[in-house]
Image (cartoon, rainbow, N blue to C red; front, top):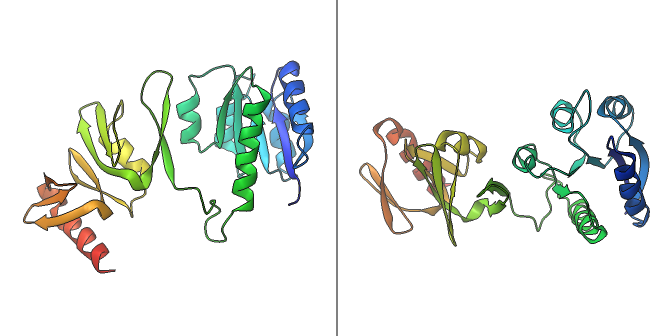
Length: 239
């Protein structure tokens, strides 16, 4: 495999030196440049392609998250920061990993190995590893982000400003509205059937009148959702 082209963006010289030293230990990485601010990195990326960006968040003028939102290219992004509180926002922006300083080399290596595996297993269809199931990270407490595989989600239930996510193996309560969470899910796999429920289409076991059964539990389909829900569920079962 051709070495992966890497840049580092961090306003702390010591942090750059640590990551530079780490990258130089791994033959599959080619460090092509380092930047002390995101403005210079933006100019570089307009004329150069890279595979991985190791990105700090707290930087002057243009911080890491705003830089990330402004990107018109899509290299793999690894956040490197001393702050844990930006993790959820970072994963919403589809970063590959979130490393909290001080970063030990084994943790850095684990991330790089994952990226290498993703690159080697990239499918022609969608650029996702053949072994990597689609997933989402949700914030289950102040510091913990829980990875949930999408094909394990059964039902999502509204609890006003919170939601309960029921999977095939566990339940999670997170601070988010049902509407905003449903918008994050693939629309071909999940369906809102009521102001209080979103269900996984492939988990529907039966449909009767204005209700359906999922995992042995019957859920009412809201009047405004009824026609669309039945069409989607029945059509998916035929195709």
